[in-house]
Image (cartoon, rainbow, N blue to C red; front, side, top):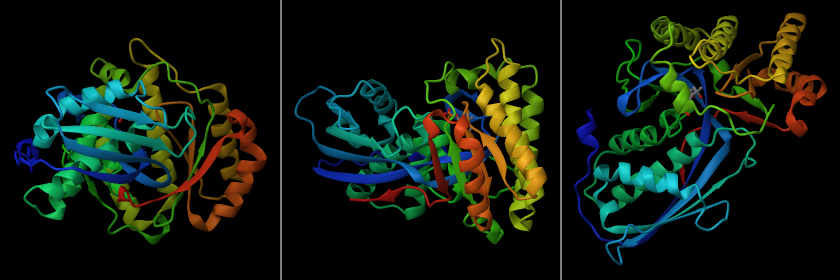
Length: 357
Ligand code: PMV
Protein backbone atom coordinates (compact mmCIF):
# COMPACT_ATOMS: atom_id res chain seq x y z
CA UNK A 1 0.00 0.00 0.00
CA UNK A 2 1.08 3.57 -0.54
CA UNK A 3 0.57 6.69 1.57
CA UNK A 4 -2.38 7.97 -0.52
CA UNK A 5 -4.35 4.80 0.28
CA UNK A 6 -4.71 6.02 3.87
CA UNK A 7 -6.45 9.29 2.97
CA UNK A 8 -10.11 9.00 3.92
CA UNK A 9 -12.41 11.43 2.14
CA UNK A 10 -15.66 9.97 3.46
CA UNK A 11 -17.77 12.69 5.03
CA UNK A 12 -20.07 12.11 7.98
CA UNK A 13 -21.46 13.93 10.99
CA UNK A 14 -21.95 11.90 14.12
CA UNK A 15 -21.76 11.83 17.92
CA UNK A 16 -20.14 9.09 19.89
CA UNK A 17 -17.33 7.85 22.05
CA UNK A 18 -14.70 5.14 21.56
CA UNK A 19 -12.20 3.80 24.06
CA UNK A 20 -9.04 1.76 23.51
CA UNK A 21 -6.14 0.37 25.47
CA UNK A 22 -2.69 0.06 23.93
CA UNK A 23 0.62 -1.23 25.28
CA UNK A 24 4.22 -0.17 25.16
CA UNK A 25 6.80 -2.28 23.28
CA UNK A 26 10.49 -3.07 23.54
CA UNK A 27 12.62 -3.18 20.40
CA UNK A 28 15.02 -6.08 19.83
CA UNK A 29 16.43 -4.74 16.54
CA UNK A 30 16.32 -1.00 17.13
CA UNK A 31 15.08 1.92 15.06
CA UNK A 32 17.67 4.67 15.37
CA UNK A 33 17.79 7.13 12.49
CA UNK A 34 15.03 8.29 10.17
CA UNK A 35 14.37 10.00 6.86
CA UNK A 36 11.70 12.69 6.30
CA UNK A 37 8.12 11.91 7.20
CA UNK A 38 8.97 9.29 9.83
CA UNK A 39 10.45 6.81 7.35
CA UNK A 40 12.95 4.61 9.20
CA UNK A 41 16.53 4.22 8.01
CA UNK A 42 16.33 0.53 8.87
CA UNK A 43 13.62 -1.96 9.80
CA UNK A 44 13.05 -2.78 13.47
CA UNK A 45 11.46 -5.65 15.39
CA UNK A 46 9.87 -5.52 18.83
CA UNK A 47 8.04 -7.48 21.47
CA UNK A 48 4.67 -5.91 22.27
CA UNK A 49 4.15 -5.81 26.04
CA UNK A 50 1.03 -6.75 27.98
CA UNK A 51 1.08 -4.79 31.23
CA UNK A 52 2.43 -1.29 30.64
CA UNK A 53 -0.31 0.48 28.71
CA UNK A 54 -2.25 3.67 27.97
CA UNK A 55 -6.05 3.89 27.97
CA UNK A 56 -7.61 6.60 25.80
CA UNK A 57 -11.19 7.61 25.08
CA UNK A 58 -12.21 9.99 22.31
CA UNK A 59 -15.63 11.63 22.39
CA UNK A 60 -16.59 13.24 19.08
CA UNK A 61 -19.43 15.54 18.06
CA UNK A 62 -20.13 17.83 15.10
CA UNK A 63 -18.31 21.17 15.42
CA UNK A 64 -20.06 23.99 17.26
CA UNK A 65 -18.17 26.75 15.44
CA UNK A 66 -15.16 27.24 13.19
CA UNK A 67 -12.69 26.84 16.05
CA UNK A 68 -10.60 23.72 16.38
CA UNK A 69 -12.03 22.40 19.66
CA UNK A 70 -9.84 19.65 21.02
CA UNK A 71 -9.84 19.07 24.78
CA UNK A 72 -7.17 16.81 26.21
CA UNK A 73 -7.22 15.46 29.78
CA UNK A 74 -4.27 13.40 31.01
CA UNK A 75 -4.25 11.38 34.26
CA UNK A 76 -7.48 13.22 35.22
CA UNK A 77 -5.84 16.65 34.82
CA UNK A 78 -8.20 18.70 32.66
CA UNK A 79 -6.65 20.51 29.69
CA UNK A 80 -3.22 19.04 30.41
CA UNK A 81 -0.20 20.88 28.88
CA UNK A 82 0.55 17.71 26.82
CA UNK A 83 -2.59 18.72 24.89
CA UNK A 84 -0.52 21.18 22.88
CA UNK A 85 1.50 18.32 21.35
CA UNK A 86 -1.69 16.32 20.74
CA UNK A 87 -3.35 19.24 18.92
CA UNK A 88 -0.30 19.67 16.68
CA UNK A 89 -0.33 15.95 15.96
CA UNK A 90 -4.05 15.97 15.12
CA UNK A 91 -3.70 18.90 12.75
CA UNK A 92 -0.77 17.14 11.06
CA UNK A 93 -2.92 14.06 10.29
CA UNK A 94 -6.22 15.68 9.34
CA UNK A 95 -5.82 14.81 5.65
CA UNK A 96 -6.11 11.14 6.62
CA UNK A 97 -9.47 11.65 8.41
CA UNK A 98 -11.97 14.04 6.89
CA UNK A 99 -14.09 13.92 10.07
CA UNK A 100 -11.35 15.74 12.01
CA UNK A 101 -12.23 18.89 10.09
CA UNK A 102 -15.89 19.00 11.17
CA UNK A 103 -15.87 17.42 14.63
CA UNK A 104 -14.87 18.55 18.12
CA UNK A 105 -12.93 16.03 20.20
CA UNK A 106 -12.62 15.42 23.90
CA UNK A 107 -9.69 13.09 24.52
CA UNK A 108 -9.03 11.51 27.92
CA UNK A 109 -5.84 9.55 28.37
CA UNK A 110 -4.32 7.60 31.26
CA UNK A 111 -1.13 5.57 31.68
CA UNK A 112 -1.16 2.64 34.08
CA UNK A 113 2.57 2.87 34.74
CA UNK A 114 3.85 5.47 37.17
CA UNK A 115 4.08 8.93 35.68
CA UNK A 116 7.73 9.91 35.18
CA UNK A 117 8.83 6.33 35.74
CA UNK A 118 11.24 6.66 32.86
CA UNK A 119 9.15 4.35 30.67
CA UNK A 120 8.59 5.89 27.27
CA UNK A 121 4.89 6.48 26.96
CA UNK A 122 4.87 7.73 23.36
CA UNK A 123 4.51 4.22 21.89
CA UNK A 124 1.48 3.31 24.00
CA UNK A 125 -0.14 6.75 23.90
CA UNK A 126 0.24 7.34 20.15
CA UNK A 127 -0.88 3.83 19.22
CA UNK A 128 -3.87 4.20 21.52
CA UNK A 129 -4.96 7.57 20.11
CA UNK A 130 -4.48 6.26 16.59
CA UNK A 131 -6.62 3.19 17.35
CA UNK A 132 -9.42 5.48 18.58
CA UNK A 133 -9.32 7.71 15.48
CA UNK A 134 -9.27 4.79 13.04
CA UNK A 135 -12.12 3.19 14.99
CA UNK A 136 -14.24 6.35 14.59
CA UNK A 137 -13.55 6.21 10.84
CA UNK A 138 -14.42 2.54 10.57
CA UNK A 139 -17.67 2.92 12.53
CA UNK A 140 -18.95 5.81 10.45
CA UNK A 141 -17.67 5.54 6.90
CA UNK A 142 -17.89 3.08 4.04
CA UNK A 143 -16.45 -0.09 5.43
CA UNK A 144 -13.17 -1.44 4.21
CA UNK A 145 -11.47 -4.74 5.04
CA UNK A 146 -10.27 -5.23 8.64
CA UNK A 147 -6.72 -5.54 7.35
CA UNK A 148 -6.93 -1.96 5.99
CA UNK A 149 -7.89 -0.58 9.41
CA UNK A 150 -5.15 -2.61 11.12
CA UNK A 151 -2.58 -1.07 8.79
CA UNK A 152 -4.02 2.42 9.16
CA UNK A 153 -3.81 2.23 12.98
CA UNK A 154 -0.12 1.49 12.71
CA UNK A 155 0.38 4.03 9.90
CA UNK A 156 -1.15 6.89 11.96
CA UNK A 157 0.63 5.80 15.16
CA UNK A 158 3.93 5.94 13.23
CA UNK A 159 3.33 9.59 12.36
CA UNK A 160 3.01 10.35 16.10
CA UNK A 161 6.09 8.35 17.14
CA UNK A 162 7.94 5.83 14.98
CA UNK A 163 8.10 3.05 17.54
CA UNK A 164 4.36 3.47 18.26
CA UNK A 165 3.66 1.84 14.88
CA UNK A 166 4.78 -1.47 16.44
CA UNK A 167 2.32 -1.34 19.38
CA UNK A 168 -1.00 -1.75 17.56
CA UNK A 169 -0.41 -5.48 17.12
CA UNK A 170 1.48 -8.21 18.92
CA UNK A 171 3.18 -10.16 20.27
CA UNK A 172 5.97 -9.64 17.71
CA UNK A 173 5.96 -6.92 15.06
CA UNK A 174 8.24 -5.57 12.35
CA UNK A 175 8.21 -2.01 11.07
CA UNK A 176 10.19 -1.07 8.00
CA UNK A 177 10.73 -2.59 4.63
CA UNK A 178 12.88 -5.75 4.76
CA UNK A 179 13.84 -8.33 2.14
CA UNK A 180 13.39 -10.95 4.85
CA UNK A 181 9.66 -10.36 5.36
CA UNK A 182 7.08 -10.33 2.59
CA UNK A 183 4.54 -7.49 3.01
CA UNK A 184 6.83 -5.40 5.22
CA UNK A 185 6.61 -1.64 4.80
CA UNK A 186 8.23 1.61 5.89
CA UNK A 187 4.73 3.04 6.35
CA UNK A 188 3.35 0.66 9.02
CA UNK A 189 4.25 -2.35 11.10
CA UNK A 190 3.20 -5.92 10.35
CA UNK A 191 2.60 -8.84 12.68
CA UNK A 192 5.39 -11.42 12.41
CA UNK A 193 4.29 -13.69 15.26
CA UNK A 194 3.72 -16.74 13.02
CA UNK A 195 6.48 -19.24 12.51
CA UNK A 196 8.05 -18.40 15.88
CA UNK A 197 9.43 -21.11 18.17
CA UNK A 198 7.23 -21.72 21.20
CA UNK A 199 10.00 -20.63 23.60
CA UNK A 200 9.21 -17.06 22.55
CA UNK A 201 5.43 -17.33 22.96
CA UNK A 202 5.43 -16.32 26.62
CA UNK A 203 8.72 -14.47 26.84
CA UNK A 204 9.16 -12.17 29.84
CA UNK A 205 10.40 -8.59 30.07
CA UNK A 206 11.30 -7.11 33.45
CA UNK A 207 11.84 -3.36 33.30
CA UNK A 208 14.31 -2.03 35.84
CA UNK A 209 13.82 1.71 36.37
CA UNK A 210 17.29 3.11 36.98
CA UNK A 211 16.43 6.77 36.65
CA UNK A 212 12.92 8.15 36.26
CA UNK A 213 14.11 11.63 35.25
CA UNK A 214 13.31 13.28 31.95
CA UNK A 215 15.91 12.46 29.25
CA UNK A 216 18.31 15.26 28.39
CA UNK A 217 18.16 14.40 24.70
CA UNK A 218 14.85 13.40 23.10
CA UNK A 219 14.78 10.47 20.68
CA UNK A 220 13.84 12.81 17.83
CA UNK A 221 17.12 14.67 18.30
CA UNK A 222 18.94 11.34 18.59
CA UNK A 223 17.43 10.16 15.28
CA UNK A 224 18.45 13.40 13.60
CA UNK A 225 22.04 13.13 14.79
CA UNK A 226 22.30 9.85 12.88
CA UNK A 227 22.25 11.87 9.62
CA UNK A 228 25.79 13.03 10.40
CA UNK A 229 27.05 10.07 12.41
CA UNK A 230 30.21 8.62 10.76
CA UNK A 231 29.06 5.04 11.47
CA UNK A 232 25.47 5.43 10.29
CA UNK A 233 25.66 3.49 7.02
CA UNK A 234 27.43 0.59 8.69
CA UNK A 235 24.78 0.65 11.41
CA UNK A 236 21.88 0.58 8.94
CA UNK A 237 23.46 -2.39 7.11
CA UNK A 238 24.06 -4.27 10.37
CA UNK A 239 20.49 -3.63 11.51
CA UNK A 240 19.09 -4.94 8.20
CA UNK A 241 21.24 -8.02 8.58
CA UNK A 242 20.09 -8.46 12.19
CA UNK A 243 16.50 -8.60 10.96
CA UNK A 244 17.24 -11.69 8.89
CA UNK A 245 19.34 -13.21 11.72
CA UNK A 246 16.49 -12.64 14.17
CA UNK A 247 14.01 -14.26 11.79
CA UNK A 248 16.13 -17.43 11.83
CA UNK A 249 16.47 -17.26 15.63
CA UNK A 250 12.71 -16.93 16.01
CA UNK A 251 12.33 -20.11 13.95
CA UNK A 252 15.08 -22.13 15.63
CA UNK A 253 14.59 -20.93 19.21
CA UNK A 254 18.39 -20.74 19.68
CA UNK A 255 18.58 -18.62 22.82
CA UNK A 256 22.37 -18.12 22.78
CA UNK A 257 22.01 -16.37 19.44
CA UNK A 258 19.02 -14.40 20.72
CA UNK A 259 21.03 -13.20 23.72
CA UNK A 260 23.96 -12.19 21.55
CA UNK A 261 21.79 -10.29 19.09
CA UNK A 262 19.65 -8.39 21.61
CA UNK A 263 22.58 -7.28 23.75
CA UNK A 264 24.66 -6.29 20.75
CA UNK A 265 21.76 -4.21 19.36
CA UNK A 266 21.30 -2.39 22.69
CA UNK A 267 24.99 -1.57 23.07
CA UNK A 268 25.27 -0.58 19.42
CA UNK A 269 22.60 2.14 19.59
CA UNK A 270 24.17 3.51 22.77
CA UNK A 271 27.56 3.49 21.04
CA UNK A 272 25.95 5.59 18.28
CA UNK A 273 24.88 8.10 20.93
CA UNK A 274 28.48 8.21 22.16
CA UNK A 275 29.72 8.79 18.62
CA UNK A 276 27.19 11.45 17.60
CA UNK A 277 28.13 15.10 17.40
CA UNK A 278 27.21 16.47 19.88
CA UNK A 279 27.75 13.20 21.79
CA UNK A 280 25.55 12.23 24.70
CA UNK A 281 25.37 9.50 27.31
CA UNK A 282 22.02 8.13 28.44
CA UNK A 283 23.32 5.19 30.46
CA UNK A 284 23.92 5.85 34.18
CA UNK A 285 26.48 4.19 36.47
CA UNK A 286 23.71 1.89 37.75
CA UNK A 287 22.82 0.87 34.19
CA UNK A 288 26.35 -0.53 33.85
CA UNK A 289 26.22 -2.10 37.34
CA UNK A 290 23.07 -3.99 36.37
CA UNK A 291 24.49 -5.07 32.99
CA UNK A 292 27.67 -6.34 34.66
CA UNK A 293 25.68 -8.36 37.18
CA UNK A 294 23.46 -9.85 34.50
CA UNK A 295 26.55 -10.98 32.56
CA UNK A 296 28.08 -12.56 35.69
CA UNK A 297 24.82 -14.20 36.72
CA UNK A 298 24.44 -15.73 33.26
CA UNK A 299 28.01 -17.02 33.30
CA UNK A 300 27.50 -18.62 36.72
CA UNK A 301 24.02 -20.07 36.24
CA UNK A 302 23.87 -20.59 32.44
CA UNK A 303 20.29 -19.28 32.58
CA UNK A 304 19.13 -17.60 29.34
CA UNK A 305 18.59 -14.02 30.45
CA UNK A 306 19.68 -11.07 28.32
CA UNK A 307 19.43 -7.31 28.63
CA UNK A 308 18.31 -4.64 26.23
CA UNK A 309 18.10 -0.87 26.59
CA UNK A 310 15.71 1.76 25.31
CA UNK A 311 16.79 5.35 24.62
CA UNK A 312 17.45 5.95 28.30
CA UNK A 313 19.07 4.46 31.36
CA UNK A 314 16.53 1.73 32.16
CA UNK A 315 17.43 -1.91 31.68
CA UNK A 316 14.98 -4.41 30.18
CA UNK A 317 15.68 -8.05 31.03
CA UNK A 318 14.43 -10.65 28.57
CA UNK A 319 13.97 -14.32 29.51
CA UNK A 320 11.74 -17.30 28.77
CA UNK A 321 8.81 -18.07 31.05
CA UNK A 322 10.43 -21.37 32.09
CA UNK A 323 13.11 -19.55 34.13
CA UNK A 324 10.84 -16.80 35.44
CA UNK A 325 11.10 -17.77 39.10
CA UNK A 326 14.92 -17.89 39.20
CA UNK A 327 15.32 -14.64 37.26
CA UNK A 328 12.82 -12.74 39.36
CA UNK A 329 14.54 -13.99 42.55
CA UNK A 330 17.87 -12.76 41.14
CA UNK A 331 16.31 -9.38 40.31
CA UNK A 332 14.95 -8.99 43.84
CA UNK A 333 18.14 -10.09 45.54
CA UNK A 334 20.80 -8.43 43.38
CA UNK A 335 19.35 -5.80 41.05
CA UNK A 336 16.57 -3.86 42.74
CA UNK A 337 19.08 -1.97 44.85
CA UNK A 338 20.29 -0.27 41.66
CA UNK A 339 16.76 0.85 40.71
CA UNK A 340 15.28 4.18 41.75
CA UNK A 341 13.23 3.40 44.88
CA UNK A 342 13.30 -0.28 43.83
CA UNK A 343 10.98 0.57 40.91
CA UNK A 344 10.49 -2.24 38.41
CA UNK A 345 7.75 -3.82 36.30
CA UNK A 346 7.56 -7.53 35.49
CA UNK A 347 5.97 -7.43 32.06
CA UNK A 348 5.61 -10.03 29.29
CA UNK A 349 4.54 -10.37 25.67
CA UNK A 350 1.08 -9.10 24.73
CA UNK A 351 -1.32 -8.69 21.84
CA UNK A 352 -1.43 -4.97 20.95
CA UNK A 353 -4.27 -2.44 20.95
CA UNK A 354 -7.61 -3.59 22.31
CA UNK A 355 -11.04 -1.97 22.03
CA UNK A 356 -12.74 -1.29 25.37
CA UNK A 357 -15.79 0.66 24.24
O1 PMV B 1 9.81 6.09 18.41
P1 PMV B 1 10.89 6.98 18.94
O2 PMV B 1 11.12 8.16 18.07
O3 PMV B 1 10.62 7.37 20.38
O4 PMV B 1 12.28 6.18 18.93
C1 PMV B 1 12.47 4.97 19.61
C2 PMV B 1 13.90 4.64 19.68
C3 PMV B 1 14.28 3.39 20.45
O5 PMV B 1 13.40 3.16 21.53
C4 PMV B 1 15.67 3.60 21.02
C5 PMV B 1 14.36 2.16 19.55
C6 PMV B 1 13.08 1.53 19.11
O6 PMV B 1 13.09 0.95 18.02
O7 PMV B 1 12.08 1.56 19.86
